[in-house]
Image (tube, rainbow, N blue to C red; front, side, top):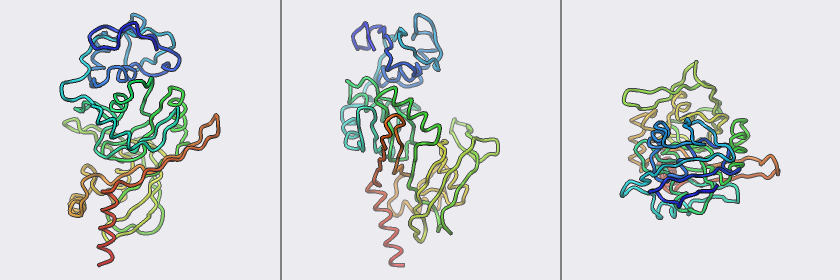
Length: 321
């Protein structure tokens, strides 16, 4: 990527797309280069024609091609007091589980969004980019809910991003989660294979519901530890729909601990008494094989201390019951 202007926010930049940047959407490209700018502002710049490719207007879904000339207007990149400072990137650096020249796997903390937007000035990807200004490419491969912790894939090359997206589409990435469910699980493993549909409620809140006209969704639940009031399960995802585990668990009548949207208020209150301050959902394992080299990648993230402490309290209660 070549730029004819200094890397600053006060002058128009003309950026020539190189092969490694080709294939990505213009909106994602702009999020990378306008650090700290809300996604809503990026779309406004595109809508007003302030961003141009080869001197012409483009839509957010336009995919860049090698040799494209992108006009990036001067933008106030960061609102005062809200940029991802060096501390944010340094904290994330301590949670890197795996890294090579093409890929980074992060143990995302609960309560941290994967990207800025919806009132958030920055997320994981913006903090990483701010802490690695020399990195030519850093993109989210997939997403985790803000309250979910654990393994998050971040591509360091466009070719790796395309490869991983293809593996995800074909179901070749094994994604396993740990979740604490309400109640005592009866029997062994159980598969939930019911379609899910996203809907928008008044006020803009997004909800996901079981619906016959929804998209196919399949989750495989396996009980690990049964407590008096709850059960720790491992969930293997065959699809990756929004809120899939949370909605499928609620569909079984055993919602997740700490789930304020789909959960049980009485159960959540009881878990808060035992110290739970978040959703108990953790992406604990990712595994896939790189098609070209046959290299097997398997990364796991241990449970955070607060979740382990809750399980210890549940076990202690059971022992003294």
